Length: 287
Image (tube, rainbow, N blue to C red; front, top):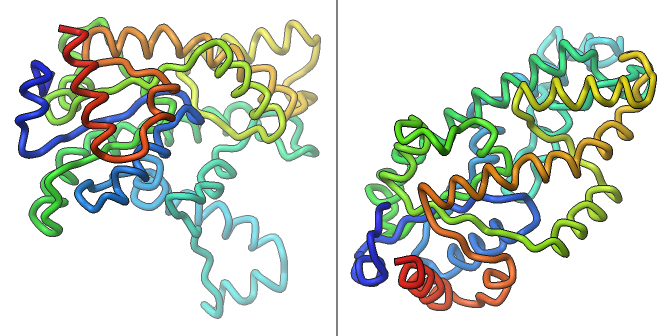
């Protein structure tokens, strides 16, 4: 690990961390606290995906939809209007909308082949954004003079790595430059995430093998054809399984490549000093 002990963490002139875990357990909460202290640069993987790697896909898809409307088609063809996604740290809806959900096109669903294509675009984009971490560490120091750095990852990071492989290229590079920190939730947190997702489901990115499994299971269990799948029903049905699928992958990442803190510990943090003390005590306990 980047910091071999609590003392090494306390003595480090530059502290660099990477948060991972399910969305909704505090990654962005703690990132905002650290950023607001004035000494931490906040690098959001999801924002980088939307603005650098998928922005053109999203804009082209919106333009293709606009071209179906004669009024908008004419304005686009003579360059009277432009369509660009409005992506911010707080608003990533354009990325989620582009990813979509497979199922009945009359209910807003995508054909499964198109859905897989967009999933693969996201996978490649997320990996590239994660590999950009070192560039942003150097950039934040060189241009802005930030001594400390946060990499705020999306929930799907665990889908693209093999934590048991000591030569996994993504984990090797990330652990060389940052301390990987898993924010672990309890069973109560998991149930709350499921309830929250059920109220407002959001498209997710899945490991291809997992997607094939849950898609086939859904078709068989509900005795439906792909074109008859209710997209939102599929999304809700899959979410709890995705949580169970990701939990051991997160745990293995933390065991082999980083440290673990709980969502309750993160929610108790109010200042950057609180956070630094939490990581110090975590490293001390782990050693």
